[in-house]
Length: 345
Image (cartoon, rainbow, N blue to C red; front, top):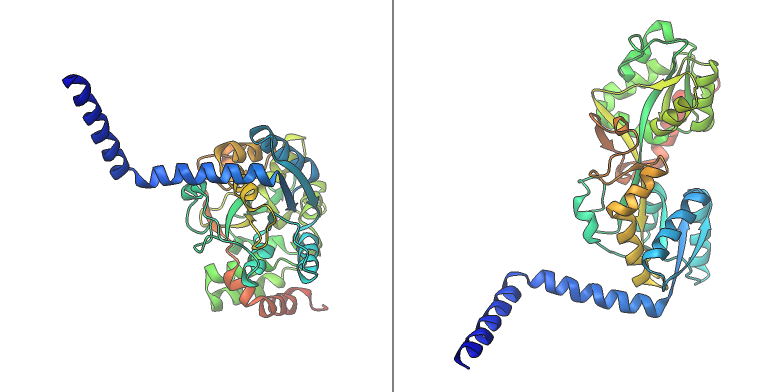
């Protein structure tokens, strides 16, 4: 009896010690259980996304395997159209979206309008500064490094420009393509270079008889076809896919900052199924969810999940293109860009 009493006392002491040492862990476990129970009652999740349909279907399918009690629905379109539908519904007091996942530009605009809820996923702790909102409204889902693309039949690897300043060399005149609305690149490169140096670079760059074209996919195709030797901004993962199919195209690995656009995931303030939404955010940011992106040849935002191939980010000084300054100065950015690059020659 004495030994049994001692054991009970010891167990009680250990329990108290665990509760004292790990109160947050116990609280988190309880909150998680409450979230699961609430999500079961909700039983539904509506995803508003800019992902390709096949990608969105894969994500919701894998999510449903983990949480079979949640039925998923998808509205998929371009980021701008997803945002437009969301705002039209909001004005009509219709709230359908549980997840809003598009370019950081649209996500940040919703945050600025007070239309996003705060949710800090446990998974977000591994995401570096710049890849998550300090106030907890969004976290980066995947990233898109902006790189110079070049035609390997026209430009050798040793002669390829190693930086944007190299694009000013006379030999590239008339051989460079630039997207007609490259506002993020313009704003953030000005931030990196500094206003005066940046503006001088942009003006000199515009004198290179640039081929202005609409769409980054088109730019990569023009480079691969040899219609231009270089494209100022292409997506490195797209170039890698084109290379794998035999296209004569490659991309420049900068030694300096590599401007990186972000695609973000968030939960609307009036999400009708908020607990299911939290589970989906946790899943999307987890190693499992980010590994799905890797399989889709996207570039995961999570730093401990390397892309395919790893060279897409390995060794690069990634500069997350956070939206704050650009959104606040959007009209000025567009006006300056258009004045320099899109004015009639």
